[in-house]
Length: 243
Image (tube, rainbow, N blue to C red):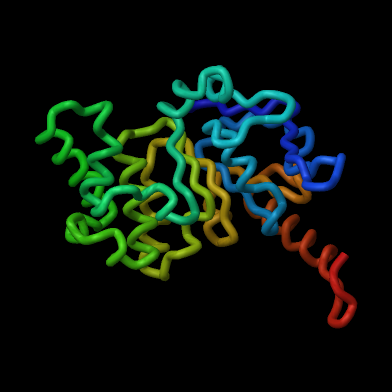
């Protein structure tokens, strides 16, 4: 199983008209070796930033992130051959007119033969029940169908690590169940942020992120309980706002 390591990682960004930067993640040290890792927390807590560090979409301000020893800054190409990333909004990564073309595009570097590339692309789409949609315009697909097509394009190249940023957000119940079953059957290491606590409970390990720090790291049921407790303590009653 791949090892994803965070060593004293801080991420901060400048703030206009302020000498003090905004800290998105603060002093994160983790070693992620479990097969299925969930990341939960409120919007703005730092979940997406944490995930984007894994394949170099975000660089640490200080500290380092490595994937099987490869640094996400110094060896970003090697890291991205290992790490596949699925965005919350599939239109952020579906760039071709149809799903077939997009999945084939993802295979272009690794599969030179056109017929074999088409066969592998169709197999990837068929695995997610998408083959009948292969030649439809991306813009004719539902949000859930686009999300699954983006997942098919990433899985086609067989990454060792699959990072998913809130993948069930746009899915209806049927497609959510298809996603759940698909993830359960994968050999890849999965690192996934989600607001779906039932999905989080199916992970092997769950991180709770709060205000840029790891609030809890442990078994799924305990993590979800810790997150619920955190939400209760950070939400005041009616008329009093939040704190």
